Length: 399
Image 1 (cartoon, rainbow, N blue to C red):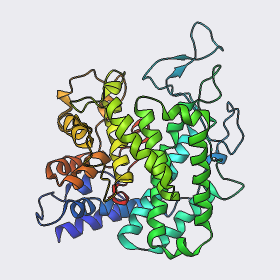
Image 2: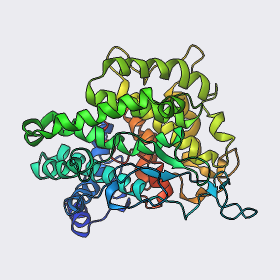
Image 3: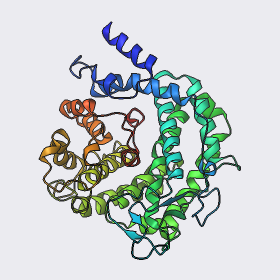
Image 4: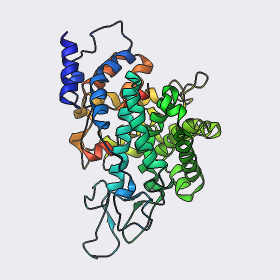
């Protein structure tokens, strides 16, 4: 009765924080699978978030004018986060302050895409729990606006992302901005699997065509190819995007390519033998970037694993794999004070949160300790930098 009342109160008050989740102890029913426990932990939050999402109207890149963009109104635009005006040359090219975000840079398109991702992720999660067609129909409104409506759609390219004033109109590393479409693509898959509104309507083919066009751009344009070859989390994020979008569109060739890349490039070059990520720990925000990269690798495993090619259990000949990565980072998620590297120059106090890597790996390896830690962490962070680096926010649609 108390659990039922708690869930009802959460829904009534529209609570999005972790308080609701923490009222359900992880040991309440040891016979439940960890997937069932994760679902029960998130149910009230998901339904409350979806109720709010039903009230939201679509907003795309065309709703915000980017005056410094070299592109048009349908082109996504963002500016490099760590670039600032040069005090020695006002009005000249910007200079870099690594790890220090310039609050004056244009972020409206990024925020719109994060909002879009959160709405679709919430609606898809709630649909998975209830099969209420209201969620599917409302998701379609937002999907039409972003991908199909000629007046509001976003062009399937990132020519003007992570621009730098006075230096570049766009850069290859800007490809990382569309990690915010991961849960959009996954949400479409969830709706396609069982929603009559998706299966019978004309929109699905057009949505997949948009993602197919973007995949072509990601895998042929110099910006996309440059990002593929980035050595750190940028290369990981290229791979997870291509994998997720290829799965949605049924591109088996790219799925195989990403599996091979994970095994032969990402793990050998990014993970050390102890499970850490040296390319992240040497940066100015080593803790946040390490968590971010582990989340991206866990999502790769979730997207690409098959019964005959299970990336969750895959290890390089010297033992590097997702399990070693979580075993390295978990003690510092549980006790951040023990972190052996430098503190992040910004946002140190805002990490960790309820990272998707924790719940995905906990369920896959049936580890209650990892799930317990995930349950008590913040499931609804509001800091923009955290949201930007947490593109998988709705684990139910990935389990």
